[in-house]
Length: 200
View 1 (cartoon, rainbow, N blue to C red):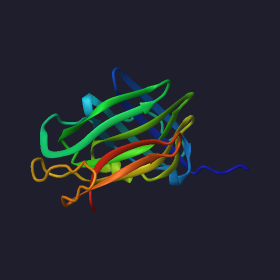
View 2: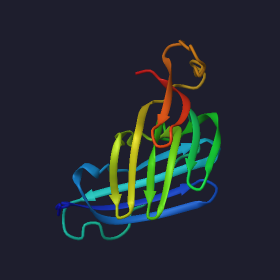
View 3: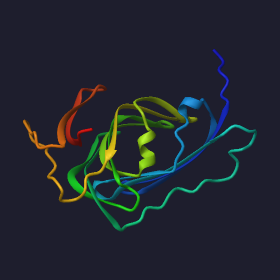
């Protein structure tokens, strides 16, 4: 069935894992898929993602370019448990670590899901420091551009605790407030992982 797509999308992404990868998207999209940026994410071992998304509703309004955000390297006194695990042709995993957040990245995020970029499909389980704009992301499918689809199975975003205030609680039976332990089950393939989260 033909569906009218009333918005135009302009998006830019810069990701660094071991090498840098950039992507620019221009397309039409449904309003439910508009999650405007900018926002940034930083994971353990210098894995980063910088994203900017703009949506508009007039002809040709997504012409031109849009810059990705920059992130200050100055610590902001907050911290998040961080890990990064993706599956493409095999698992690539970065060890968990307590990450000192910098600049405007004063929230923690935990996500799991499937990201499709063109002909590439990635299964991901991630956690790290993010800017507040990242918290607009919700569980479910989002079609950001032609060939760019994200299906989030879990998306949890919360204010990052201050460094040294309380220890992160990452063991079975942990009850040290305000932290609670969660277990993550990624439904595609039954991949399990554990992480800590600030109880809300």
